[in-house]
Image (cartoon, rainbow, N blue to C red):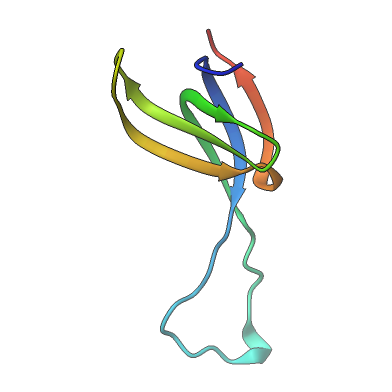
Length: 77
């Protein structure tokens, strides 16, 4: 699947920064459902790396997603 255009559905962390919260009124922090599309340039058991754009010799917009966070991955083309 390397160098193929893929769609990855994955979960990301969520947090609250810089605010005090009363423990008796905490709401659950549900992980964020994310969808990313890109060319798969690194496909191994620990992570997947995609890029937004690629040429014959260069890439731009790299993103690595840990495999344990991935719910689904499918080839687009």
